[in-house]
Length: 141
Image (cartoon, rainbow, N blue to C red):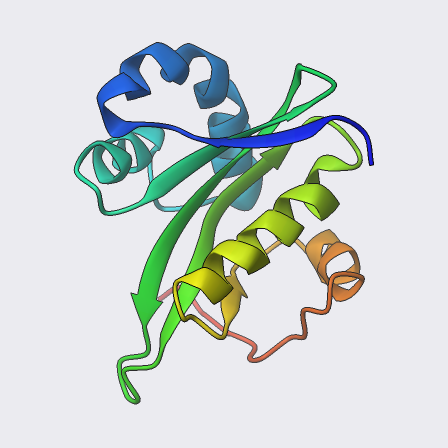
């Protein structure tokens, strides 16, 4: 493995990290047509509703992950939601997901969840053991 390191951002220090991570998060938001704003992530991380993790490969910025715990509204089963994932190195996703799986296991969570309208993720995540669990259909009126 290359020199991989995933660092959890201390919410108190988020302001200092923001110039590094915001452009990637904004790119994710725009490409996914997401309803959330980057400021929603900032607020959630700052108040403890989500965690942010910055990845480095060989001491160079490789991407950012934003995680939050979700509960199924019907079963109350908790899962770890990958709210936003931005990578700028081809290996960052593989290394980052390995760390996220370990975090979820340590927290007693048995499921990782990732949402995206972008079809390319189905190929990338299938290689990491993810399966499509549902399809969502919408029609604007």
